[in-house]
Amino acid sequence: MRVVWSPRCFGTDMANVMYLVHRMPYPPNKGDKVRSFHMLEQLLQDHRVFLGTFLDDPADEEHVPALASMCADLHLERLKRPWAKLRALRGLMQNKPLSVCHYVSGGMRQWVRATLAHHHIDACVVVSSPMAAYLMPNPQVATNLILDLVDVDSQKWRRISTAKSWPMSWVLRREARLLLGHERKAVMAARQSFLVTERETRLFDAVAPECRGRVQTMGNGVDAAFFAVSQARASPFPSGEQAVVFVGTMDYWPNIDAVQWFASEVLPVLRKTCPAAVLHVVGRNPAPEVLALASPAVRITGTVPDVRPFLQHASAVVAPMRVSPGLPNKLLEALAMEQPVVTTPGCALAIETDERSGVLVADDAGAWVDQVRTLLTQPERKLVLGGLARQHVLNHFRWADRLAPLRRSLSIDQEREPR
Image 1 (tube, rainbow, N blue to C red):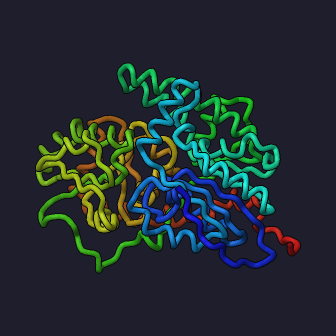
Image 2 (image 1 turned 90 degrees about the horizontal axis):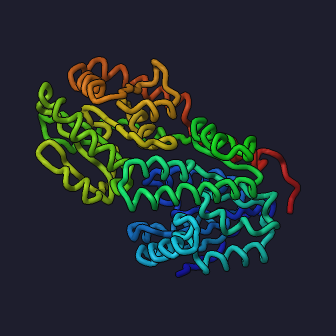
């Protein structure tokens, strides 16, 4: 289905950009949507934006008019999960990556072609390798294609496959192999590509050596004005409870694995010395495995209207992702809320931690118990670490600074002749 909105009026000296995103980038309330929304904000400063995207959450429907008002044109495809799954299954028989098949749309393909034909498009900015499939066959856009892979998704599926049993392990290994081939072709077709951390960039260089030099790092940021402590914000936790908070989308396997591991390996030992500690799993769409964790020691909130009260009033914030591609926004948001975070070495590496970052690293269950216990029993130290945490994101994770590579690739800062 398509929703057509009347184009806005823009200055005649503004360049035209086609922006293709696999998930509607507004509101910015979920990891990948946060990044793509702030990219959209950067583009809108100097461009007419022709946005093609998918809506996969009915709750986002009410925000479509606001998104449309930002853009010169909006093409919106509503992603029906049963049909998307059927397209993905068809990919099993066609030797294609399921991730790419998931986002196949005749309507999107027609809109891309019509927009290229009827408007002078100066550049095409694409988020995720599946969306690049709409432009890769078109030599017209090759020199003006800018691709944000975000993460090396093929290697994420490879890592997850090792934790799954057959036949899912076979499906995921297949996806890793085919998607890597697609990622390599997409990067070779683009003028410039980005990944979210240096670690992901080095990983892609290793698995796609022919693409070396074509990918650079463009990190995530955080809206520190929004994620700030407010004395007017009430606590959502019962009095006397020590809330240990995990925030994330809870149908995403790395998050599911994280809370399952923490609930089984860390929390029982922690509660022997900190009996008031209760794990709060805060996030939308909790999977059955997550709901099964519910107990007096584990509370599952599901979707909350505002995550900030849970972060601000937490006794400890944890991010125990063992499969941790990219740079999780949840960590940056907690740090901005003056919360030190206990996390894994892989996530800590992505945040460029040092002794002044407010990030505590734990690499096994015993270390996790010690680090979380420190936050629960040493409030003075937690307060100092929280101040360091916010200063760290203010110094290093402003969105405008982080997205500067995108602006440079589009030459936004160079003066243009009027159209």
